[in-house]
Image (cartoon, rainbow, N blue to C red; front, side, top):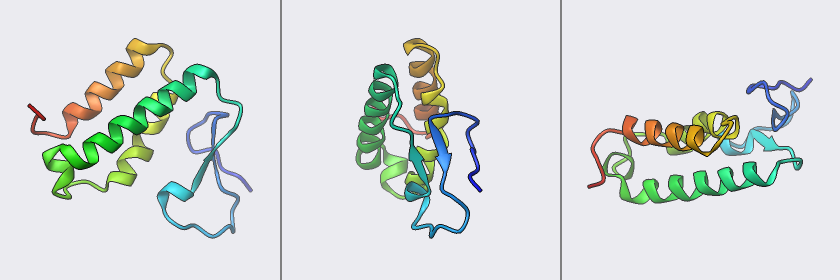
Length: 101
């Protein structure tokens, strides 16, 4: 039985009974993504990777960083336009606390 946690055709949970090797391996993304969705995922990956090493609160281990990625993935994929996507990213970054500046 598959479970769609994000109520979207793009992301589905693995079938029940499959071995889970961690949060990043517990989801798969459907190959039918639009060009814009792929761009959004690339941007999310770049920001996530940058913050992992350069945001003070993330770098010192205050967050389960893989879980943060999975928590924010649905909102980014469901953004209706770039402004909505960017607003979601800014909200997420602001929620991490101390500024990068």
